Image (cartoon, rainbow, N blue to C red; front, side, top):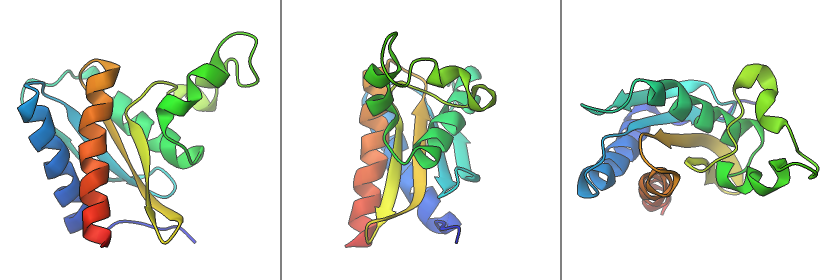
Length: 139
């Protein structure tokens, strides 16, 4: 069964991520998707790169499709490793750098978050603020 996050919750998670993006003074695009990586909500902050619209969505998709944070795919995807070339599969939707995270409830992935617009470390920091808000909402 496809798990999902309510739009109101997705918006709350996006707002938390955007507060972090504002704090570090870097406009971002934040995407929340369901357990299959399909869009629930997306917001492009003023001044965020246009390319970040599809990148953030693909990070959310990747986190759902492979059930893992996207930064954990970097090393296995290097030449000579078991997932080499992964980023060229699935019609180019797989992202192997940070900024995409699963969102879990009771050990099940019910959605994902993807963030793009800065350096990878910034994308991760902003996405992690969204994950933290998600976890607060689950308590």
